[in-house]
Structures are given as structure tokens and as C-alpha cells.
Amino acid sequence: MAATQRIAACAVIAAACAASLAGCAIGSNGSKTGAAGPQKAAKPGQAPKHVLRLIGDGSTSYTGAQPHLPRPERLKPGQKPPQFVVFSWDGAGEDSQKLFSHFRKLSKANHATMTYFLSGVYMLPEDKRDLYRPPQHSPGRSDIGFNDEKGIADTVKQLRLAWLEGNEIGTHFNGHFCGKNGGVGEWSVDEWKDEIAQAKQFVKSWKTNSGMKKAASLPFDYDKELIGARTPCLEGQQNFMKAASELGFRYDTSGVNEQIWPKKRYGLWDLSMQLVPFPGHRYEQLTMDYNFMVNQSGTLTQGDPAKFDYWGDQMRDGLLSGFRRAYDGNRAPLVIGNHFESWNGGTYMRAVDEVVEQVCNKPEVRCVSFHQLADWLDAQDPQVLAKLRTLNVGEAPKQGWESFLAGHPAPAPKGVPGAPAAKR
Image 1 (cartoon, helix red, strand yellow):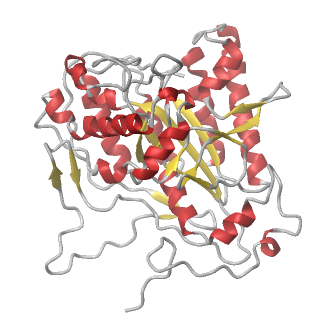
Image 2 (image 1 turned 90 degrees about the vertical axis):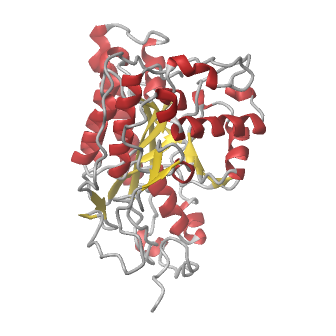
Image 3 (image 1 turned 135 degrees about the vertical axis):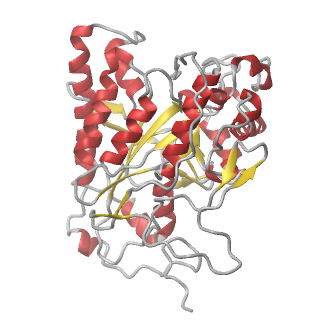
């Protein structure tokens, strides 16, 4: 399901480095609260809160802890879980459609954060394409092309602002090879490791490769920021997960699940997308725009214009049905994947807009990145998560949440997210 993005050619944009931006987190009771809290002055001998330390050629930098990344809390005995919703984007980059900037603004307006899976070749200019050496392909091959200076500058600006607003920057890898004859489903564990290393390197050296050495850096260390991914076409998941677990990743979202609470595979949280009701059909549909499109207009990315509104409503209503099924049922996180595309007249982007606006402001709902969801899952008592996994799709506890989770969970081990602060 290639996320082809047409990158406009124009003059270079020098994006200014933004300071910490205002934002909101969502508390355990669903109320909106300040995420950052009061800022304390640095103690003598400590670096200031907002310190800039360039990494490598200055393409990335260390600027301190990510703003607006809330500390997770363990569920209290008898407490109903929040309803998590994750919106994520494959092959994230800013082009003439300006969809990256659009969904950044939509997130801020609706108390949400999202995950942006960056394609590494979007940080590599066309004239440097031979720097990419894809597994099982000749140097410089890519099924989604490369970029130009304006596209790189525009994408870097959005990545910078997105991270400062509390969003996550993951990876969609590089050349987006699907199917047979060298597709990602045929790659070995070592080939996946090589692809991951190249995806990181293109982000860590975009200034050198683009020639924009005076541009502002990305405000994060990508070696530490990168903790999860989605594979192209949802292929090659098993060998990718084996490679990712050895490289310190924390989650994967490359498969298809039902709407139940997640578990770990190969040491990673399996946060795959899910099947939800498909209005007008007896079968269920994957929570991704591409799959809705294929089941509506086939391989035509621009089908019958008379059906655009209907198709968009179908996707919106299917996602909302899946949301309600979880919200009123087992409270399993809802995972949604999309592309920055204008397929079928942009109807799927409109559908996502409406879902964000309708669900992210509800009580007890947290629209978060995969990073935040993984943090929360890691903070929970494993026995509580195991009990949550006994609930089927749409199944609420018969005796109510207070009784269902009334046990006394073990305290979080020292140093684990959600553990009580150490006493001084």
C-alpha cells in the first residue's frame, strides 16, 4: 500500500527552531490538564532545561526531555481504564497538499497527539539517491522516490514542530518495497537491521545530504526517539520484530488484530491496527484509509466522484462504530492508520478529521501516540493487563469495572513508569 507523495519543487525554506509550545494532556479521569507543569530552575552545576546540544553534523540535537509527554500512572484498584485512540500516519512528509501541517493543527485543537512514521528517503535528495542501498535491490532504488530541497525543508519543519508539541516520530523505513522480488516480506533479520540503520542515518545526516548546513536541527536524538514502526504493506512483520527487539524498539504496529487489549510478541508491544464494522457489509474492515479505498474503488485512487461523500462517511462511521464498541465495552485501545493522500477526492482525510473531532474530546478518552500508549502499558500491573485481555471484542465486565478490577495490584517496581516517586 505505497504512500506515494508528490513533492513540489521550489525555493528552500529555512525553518526556525520553535520553543516549547503550549499543550494539554488528558488526565486519568478524562479531564484536560496542563502537561508540562511548573518549570523549576536548574540547580547549580546542572544544564538548563532547554539546552541545545548538536549531534553529528547538527541534523539532530539533544534539547532535553520531550515537552508535553505526560508521565503514565498505574490504574488504581477498581478504576475503569481510559479509552486510548491512536492516530498514525505512514510515510509522513510535508508536500504541496500540506496534510502534515493540517493534522498537526487538528491535533492541537482537539487535545490529541499522534504518531508520524517518517519515510527515510523523504530526507534524501534525488541527486544523492545512490546513498540508499536497499536490501535485495540495486543502490538508489525506491518505490516512492526521493525528495528535493524544498520538500526536505518543509518536512523537517513539520517534524520539529510535531515533536515539540508532544507527537511521536517513528519510521516507515525507506524504499517501500512490497510483494515478491525483493519485497520487505522476503527480508532477513539482518536485512531489516540494515534498513533500520539506513532510515536512522538519513534522518541524522539530512543537513549534509541536502546541503542545508545552516538550517535549524531537529530537536531530538533519533537513536533514542525511534522506538516503533509500521512495515510497508504490513509485510515482513515477523523478521522485522525479531530485528527490532534486538535493537531496543518497544512496539510494532504492522499486523491486523481484533479490538482486544494488546500483548507482547518478541518483547515488543503488538499494537497492530484492528478490524472494525464496515457499514453496509457483513465483514469487518481494517482501520486504514487504503483498505477502505480498495474495498470501495479498487485500485483506482480516484474513483467515481459521485460516491466520494458516501465512501468518506463509510470510513468515518466504521471507525466510530469501532470506537463506541470499545468505549462502551472492553476499553481496548483503538489503533488507526492512514496516509497523507487525497485518494478519492480527499474523502478519507475528511473522515479522519471528523473522527478526531468527535472522539478526542469525550470524557475518559486519550488520543495519544504509540509512545504514550506503550509508556502507559509498561506502567501497569501485568496481572491487570492479563485480566483485561480476558474481555472479548466489545465485552464490558458483567459485574462492572469497579468489581472487575477490584483486586490489589502489585506496586510498580522502582524506576518503572508509574511507580511512586522515591522518598527523599
